[in-house]
Image (cartoon, rainbow, N blue to C red; front, side):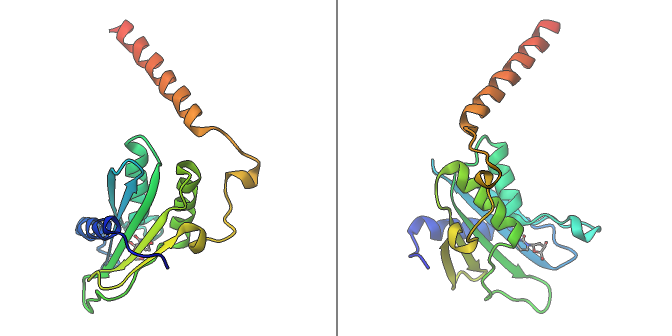
Length: 174
Ligand code: THU
């Protein structure tokens, strides 16, 4: 377990705040996540459940999606806080990311080039475990496993240029 940085403590508090936005009427279990980018920007997420139970989205998915939608997967850390808010209320259990979320965090680490710090917290923030994603998901399956060694940053620039061309065509049609 790594030592807790002041920035990690702050991120844990953001995750707790985000847990207030959970849509968790089926499990009664609220999860908040806060992702910190290498440039210091923070993106929040909360779990989003569904009457079709299997469709539920984890808080980490929401935070990583928010980061991506804002323009990058350049994560250096992600904090997770989960707590049962319906009886029996629980606030002292550390919540670690589920397997699917670990896979998503690993993918982000391949883009950011950082062994992302995963900050798993109890809701009272009395217990905070910090582990790099390489420890939480050893021998991970990633882009290299399928022979992919693409320059995503370069591809993203190509994508942005393509969207600019499409938008310029729209302006011409107006
Ligand atoms: N959940 C998360 O948001 N993140 C995790 O890493 C584990 C589980 C959510 C999914 C579901 O809405 C609730 O917690 C109970 O499983």
